[in-house]
Image (cartoon, rainbow, N blue to C red):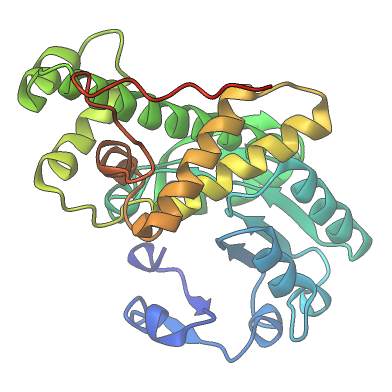
Length: 288
């Protein structure tokens, strides 16, 4: 946005993380409330629903300080029912609301190649389209409020389960004696493997899981997917199991690493006990 000449007012709960982003057109605000008094369009991108609600409705929250007819664009990955709740709160305050979560990690963001999944009235989308195209190269209008969030949830469910399934398949292959190189060379590019997994090869081979998308946020998104599935009466057994595997990986110290570190957890997990086939069979308990 700054590269396109827009003046920005910024706030981050940890100021040091945002100061490096301030260019000649940017200023830092002391609170969401003070920020809201200075802008016509407000973007949020926060970690989870509680953080969004605190920024909007908490002490020094922005909601009651936005101008009438202002527009709030929430790019956070939250659940659809939460987006609809925020849309209702916005309507009560004569504020326009758009849910517009994104697909794309830090490198695509730096190159303005994010995908925006938008839930909004058409007029509101057209009002912010030029702003979104400063940050992304694709906009999908999925429908009304909550539908952008819904699409993002479906995408992240596929990413999370796909990464875990691939890691488990790799673990099995290596356990059967196939080299990791052979598995990568043979599997990547085939219909059995999602294209995004090719970008994780370097991390897995080097063991360097510097986060593009932290594992703890993938686990959070899958947890929200199961909540949404419950609310809509949809059974998601695979997602429920996979989110718990990510939770176990978090407990094993992988929470701030890239979510591809699920491979490291599954191939090095201390929770799995193997029995030497040559060792005596375990004694059978007898009940009397």
